[in-house]
Image (cartoon, rainbow, N blue to C red; front, side):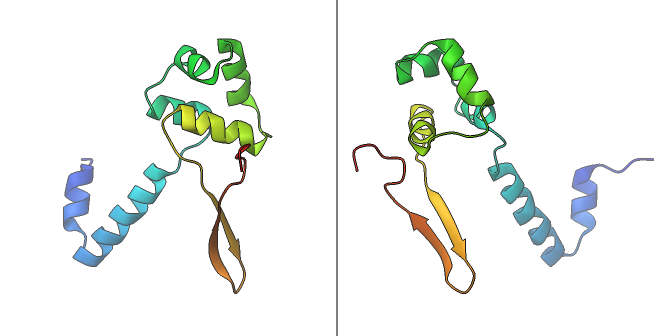
Length: 106
């Protein structure tokens, strides 16, 4: 008989359960693609088009692109209600956040 997830999680030691829950939260926080981002923001392509002052087919095109200008990505994220941050990790230097990247007004 198959066990339910709740039963399996309850059977784990506390430390292991916390580790599984933390990894689960990390995976949920990862969004694959702009379409998924838009859907999480509960916005339609038509709403995004209005906010971006473009036509709906252009939103579809942006969502399908694999190579974008950072300024386009920033505008899309902001239209979805978010804020774009660029994270850089250099060996031995740690993690840095680049600011103003993709901001046409900077």
